Image 1 (cartoon, rainbow, N blue to C red):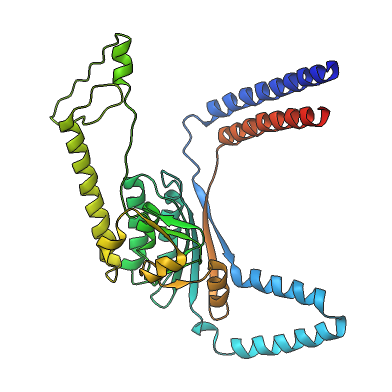
Image 2 (cartoon, rainbow, N blue to C red):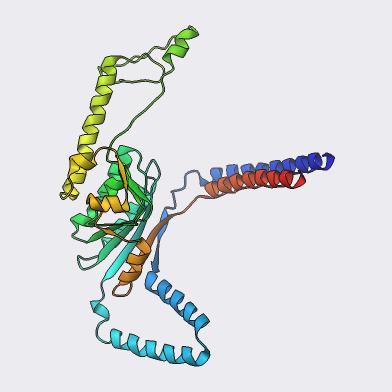
Length: 339
């Protein structure tokens, strides 16, 4: 146990020293960054056809001997030349985007830049494929994300949305923009509803003789509060606002998916892929991998990702966070080994 205590002390001192250095570097970076413009980010473009070709060639190299591989490469070369001969311009483009949504739809910033970029070149003979994963979040945040996808539809460019795991609530608000929605068999879809909740500690404060003053200008500036005493009138107004938002949500989905029986599916329920297909929430059951690899056989497929450049201060902060986490994990592992 004495060794364990010494080890823990040494680990704590080391972590403290490293964190102190990182804090100093972060402060220096912050001072240097004052007055500078944000560097922004850059667009990364990857041709997925090359990715799939590399996978196939690596597999072939492991399966065939040299003679068989040489004959296969010769055959493939002839086939590629035949396809390219006067037909290269006939291939359309498929632009693949990713959206991994949190409660604030933070990925919208990258999405808007990716869409802005592709709209400078894409034509109605091309296609945009969005791989979407989101359980929803704030109404205004997902409203903006959905509006970004609507730009693609307004430009007359086909939009396909692929869902492998979940597109619920705000996630489905985005998905319904697609002309075609493809879902994995066990993906979670739906939740066309609105929810809001907040605690109220007013009775606890009263019990300890603590008064809370809530002053407003405007009858409904505050309806329900955390600290103040809530009224039935405030509750009714809050519920009214939820109902209005829900109706707007339903109208939005119905506009892009007119085939839906909107009142039957806008109950806040969720369904797995197969059930969602029966209710016309999606158009087909297929994984995004299968769909995109199929498209790569007949089109040039490009994956777009707008990467935000992190400042030196942000990178140092992430490093400090990682140092603390590694120190804790290291100590925990050592304790478990010594038990």
